[in-house]
Every structure is written in structure tokens, then in C-alpha cells.
Image 1 (cartoon, rainbow, N blue to C red):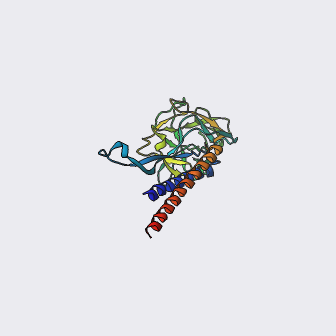
Image 2: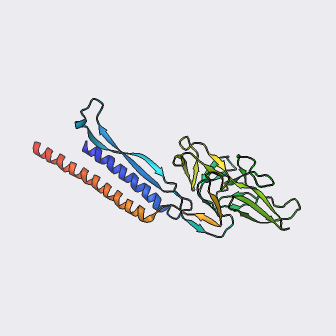
Image 3: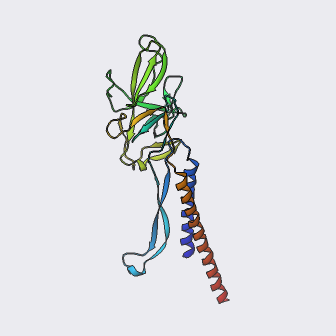
Length: 270
């Protein structure tokens, strides 16, 4: 039994080492959120077992939780590099398959068709607004910048205000508000499904998204010319790495000791 108990410990230590290694590998990944491993003990006993005779038979990985604490902000100066100063996720839609993604990575650019996209081509979503800049719907739509305005003037630049208003400036000196960036909030963010490229998708655990504009309700404001960095603390992860290594070594030593005891018993019988 001790072999299997320690074997579970080895597997758990290996899982923790993998999670820490992934955190360290993404210490410089924009918008990355670190994870941690939670363990649970396993006991051998039932309701009919004498409580004084219940013994532990190892541990198991209970969950791998994501930590959505806000990371530090780095200024870049690029108008479409965006960071959320507070809660919320950017909303993006893949134009090829219609899948919706959520992210804290605000590295966006304008493509040739006038859409604001990330490096994978997913389109940033905005809330439609009226002439006064007030959102008219909570249903997001693609952020599309018209190449010319009503007077025929060509687009010159695009910038984003703190309230999330996407402003298109034209050659004749006029500007038009395309919409307000659609931020998403979830009842249980740790339940979001990681899909890579700093993207998440909604799940049954996270609950459905609630959309709103920056600065409204629980949503943070928008920082243009900035990017949110990874929330990984390298020093903290290194301490965790040493602890996980000791955990692994201790379980390996327990297996070695159990092997020696088994060999001693065999030698006694012979």
C-alpha cells in the first residue's frame, strides 16, 4: 500500500512542477494568468469504520485553479495597445468559425478591411452607440473602422478613450465614434476554459458573460497605449518550485524505504 501512496505523491508533485514550469515559461506573456494546484487527501474508511482507525492512503489533485489577479501595466505608446484598469475581459470573435473568446491581452491592430483584430485575426467587439455616444445595445458587434466618412475624407488614425469609445479621425479634421469596447464579466472567472493564446471561453462553471462598457458598473476603465503583463511573480514561483522538488524527493525516498523493508522481509523468509 505504501508504494501506491507514495506513487500518488510522485504524480501529484509532477503535476505541481508542470504547473509551476508553465507559470515561469509565461512570466513575460502579455495578459497571462498564473495557475496553482490544490490537493486533497484520500482516506481508507467508511461510515462504519472506527474513527480512531481511519488512515490516510495518499493525496490527489483536487483542482488546478487560475488566478485572475491584475498584472502590472507596461506603456507601449501604440494607440491600439489596450489595458483594462480594473475588472473585465476584452471580447473577440473569430470571423471564420464564429467562436467567441475572452482575453486580458489588449494587443490589437487595424487590418486591411478596417477591422480591429488581434494577431490571430479575431475581431475586437464593441457595443453600438447613438449620436451622443450612449450604448444602444448590450449585444457586441465587430469593431469596423470606415475607410472614409460621409464627406469622403480618408481615415487618418484610430484611438480609444478611457470610457472605451473607439474614435476614428479623418483627414477633414472630423472624428466619429465607432462604438464602445465591449467588456465581459463572469460570475466565476476561474471557471473559464483556457484555449491558448491568452484566450478563454465561457463554460458551465464560469457562467454566461455579462457585457458592458468600460467604466460602467463593475467594469474597469480603458488605458490606451498600454498592455497588461503576466501576473506571475517569479520569486514566488521559484520558492514553489523548491517546495515541489522537496515534495517529489520525499515521496521518492518513501518508495525507496518501502523497497528496502520489502527486501528485508524477503531475506528473513529465505
